[in-house]
Image (cartoon, rainbow, N blue to C red; front, side, top):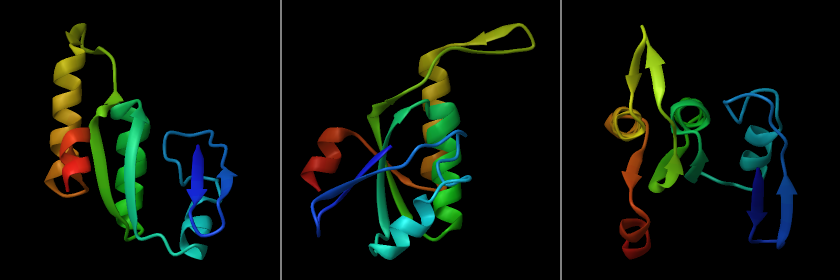
Length: 112
C-alpha cells in the first residue's frame, strides 16, 4: 500500500499481511496523524481486501468511496456452484454501497 501525504510530498509505504488493511499495521494511526477523514479505495480483490478494509474503515469513522471500475475480483465457488466474477463484483459492491461506502465509477468520481 502506498499513501501520499500532500502536505509534505512524502510517500508512506505500509505493508499488510491480512485482507483488512488496518489489521496489525500502522495505517489507522498514520491516517489520524495526517488528518485524513475520507478514503478513496480501489484495488484487488473486491470480495476480500476491498470488502474487509472498507468495513473496518467505516467502523473507524472514515467516509469511504470505492471506485468500482478500478477494483477486481474473481470467480468464487460455494457448494460446488461457481459464482461468476461479474456477479461477485455486483454483489459485494452493492452490499458496500448500502451502508459502508459510496460506490462510483472513475468517470463519476472525476466529475464530482
